[in-house]
Picture 1: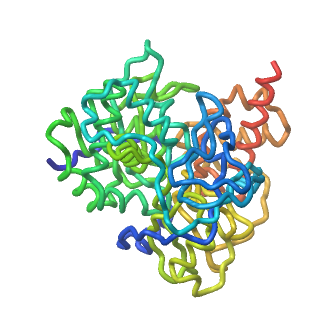
Picture 2: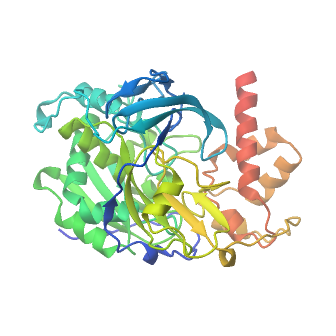
Length: 445
């Protein structure tokens, strides 16, 4: 079965230079174990995991080293066997420090006797699938890292009829999801069937931008007969097609209300990498201990898509890709639109590290922020139909009440407004600060 074209188009969006050719044709390469792994307890939205090991402990691969600290949290597992060398705070990609467990691998990579494989997963009850996903510590691997067991266990009164697999990967430079779809299409589909069973969803869509014809063809060819009402949907190539609410509208025509969630319109969206992790957890009994990350950018000698253990440093991944062949002016965890600039390459890989981007001096520019000229370009490209020009001025004046009334909390921090702004205003930073203050004010009430 071939792909169908999306019937709808979400508002706004921009067309940055994509630069995916740097790594798109590089098959996934498994990286050998590094000398040290630094595993953060904060790799997901919600409460950080609570460490269950101490300095000097020996651990096995797949052993729980961090317990979920509540429903909206996720367990963390040892990526290999070895010895715990340190339990201490380290900086996260976004900046704040979080407790991390440092493991020195013993080279044996020995698995713990833990989760039981279940190749005949169709015999499982819904709750059994959810429990396996939670036990595996799976989180969203394409965005902010929302715990997957929460997504696949909506309230009993909420009916979910549609599952969308997000294969858009609209962020420039990144190709990890693309390679997964090209190389692991059948396993991704089986993961989708497992999630659909947990949700009792009868419709499955795989949404892929039309600049990825090989991925579209691979997913269409691998579509299982038992998938029922399943389709591969070719989306118009436009950033941010990978954003949940925009993708839901493009694929189904349903609009998630302001302040609402996809489940409010009967839909759950899962990243293709997350879906593959669900397959691995349920079918093979393996918790999430590794992920594919795109290591790319002009200075990288051999850009590629690296299967690395969680906790692997950026420096080790770059070294695996041949090191650098030219000066590095900026290091970004993630992509250029929504990623976070890093001070150095010591940062560890986490469940949400979709990319490691190195930029040379020719790609990095310093601008002076100027007052808003009221051109309206940011309004035209905002996929959430917000008014970033007005919002930024409210936030500069610390008028958080008015900013909340103008729906600042609906901002998805995609960066379209800042990308388009001729005055080079730090619009995304204003929105992040404003949203954080609104949340703080709400908690005080």
